[in-house]
Length: 327
Ligand SMILES: NC(=O)c1ccc[n+]([C@@H]2O[C@H](COP(=O)([O-])OP(=O)(O)OC[C@H]3O[C@@H](n4cnc5c(N)ncnc54)[C@H](OP(=O)(O)O)[C@@H]3O)[C@@H](O)[C@H]2O)c1
Image 1 (cartoon, rainbow, N blue to C red):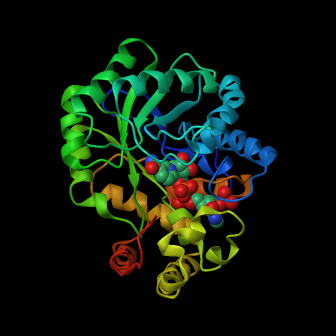
Image 2: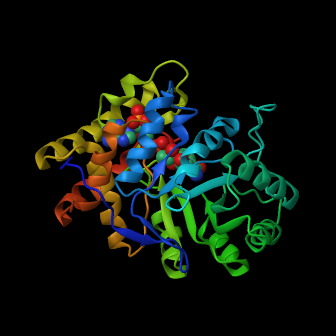
């Protein structure tokens, strides 16, 4: 199951967007949050992902306080026609204010943020521009209106939202078509299935599941023990000592199932997402994050792994049994 394949099936971004590879690459960990990174290996990972048919590369202005966008710039420049670059605005933290986790959705902030991202990415147009988080303080009309202005100005091609409710998605879509909605979705985190996924399906919005491997937890029981130093996950409730035992029992189920099927737990986690998307009739492009070439073929191959109804039944109760919030 881990043999190299060179092309992914294609999925349309929104109703009018381009066809993109059915799996994207999360680039956040290449710059921040997940412990030490190896820049050369991360660069090689970007190239290898593209060679395997991954076309959407996910970043945000706040990852590495701008460093992640800058890191991606040479890669994008080398492959501008093939790469769909997705970035996000919303968190106020900057190199000068790294601990300011407040959120700003005001038109002034959006106008300044997009120019900073364009400069760091070294592009004239951002393909997919997400509102990273929404706060009620700014009316949706104002934020989406400002984002729509960016489309008209040619600074952005398609609009996205992250972690919003179904009602917010519908209201935003009325103001300007929303191409993609990025939210956490995995075997362990399924909150969006009830309302958000049906709304997205109805509106033709592509769902981009983030942390599809549960931030690494779904890749096996050994994973949590490998977190060292300043890895942010050591402070996340799901990885905390008081929840670890219960959660590792659930991961053991995943490991056992994967072993019996001759696939890896990461592949099972991704194959579950594709199967669940199929069931819910939603277009989906998960963005597993990795900084290593060695994981890519494995993750990409999950697109072709078919789970049975019985497999899905075994995995069904796990999310409700998970202990602790994701972050
Ligand atoms: N919109 C939002 O609010 C939001 C929030 C969080 C994340 N995101 C985006 O979503 C992307 C993915 O989420 P994530 O990075 O949080 O979590 P994830 O994709 O669920 O898991 C990433 C972790 O899994 C490991 N991994 C990847 N493939 C593996 C494999 N085949 N076997 C074993 N381990 C594997 C990675 O380690 P290595 O790097 O060492 O391979 C990394 O530690 C991020 O990069 C970011 O772009 C968005």
